[in-house]
Image (tube, rainbow, N blue to C red; front, side, top):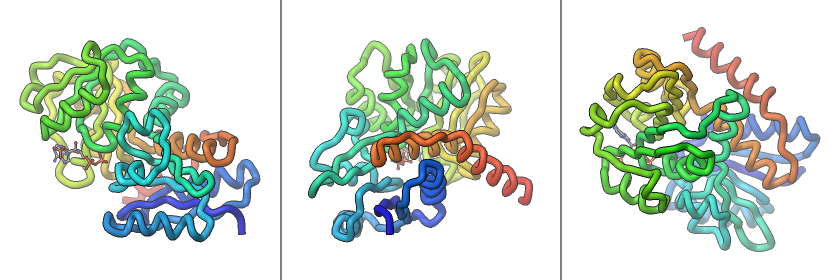
Length: 280
Ligand code: ATR
């Protein structure tokens, strides 16, 4: 039996992380076990302790536990603290160290795989929950010019803006202001509206020329936003599959000291997603 790793979430049965990490491990020749563990909010802390007790060396954490995971950590990276959430746990001695690779995963996907330049962009971030908090600091670090945060619950947008601490670049607006805040070079859907409900009602005026639209969800949950982006004329439209693979590679590198090649894994998962959609 190799070293033990896991992803914790609720629900987690459909997580692609076990498949992604198995491919990475095969690629670099590491023997490791990586399983999905379903834990409710009440059970999460106990499930993490049990995992450590049986020799767990690292974990990914997904919805809805990323904030909770950070709270369990003895230490955390600056990017995890800025995000207020951890998606990666590393066992050191008897303690968990927290990190957050979501933001760098998104930026790698866009700048390295898609070869897009984020610098100078006027960016609209829809949502202010865990997913939005995870990516906002990395976008600012990537050199965007402006970040406009719009969330259904305005207080959460203001709290995120305050936490980012960059009043010159970060602004908040109400959803009702969307028709009047101009056009953007990049629009990120970090809401769960595509997973939980019928999606968002957005004006086409938001999409600037050569606009990049990204949904942080992947598969079916991203369809309604990306369909809107297509109708609005956004030049580039991506779901969150690339980000998922890149954040996994960053977590893998934290655990094993080697960054795997993400291209073959992304190609394999994209081909599967296309095949599923064709089968529908
Ligand atoms: P995640 O970790 O995916 O970000 P979350 O922390 O629960 O999940 O955040 C969900 C985000 O989607 C929030 O910004 C939420 O808005 P509220 O803060 O007002 O709850 C947003 N969201 C969910 N359903 C939505 C809908 N139907 N319309 C607009 N925003 C929605």
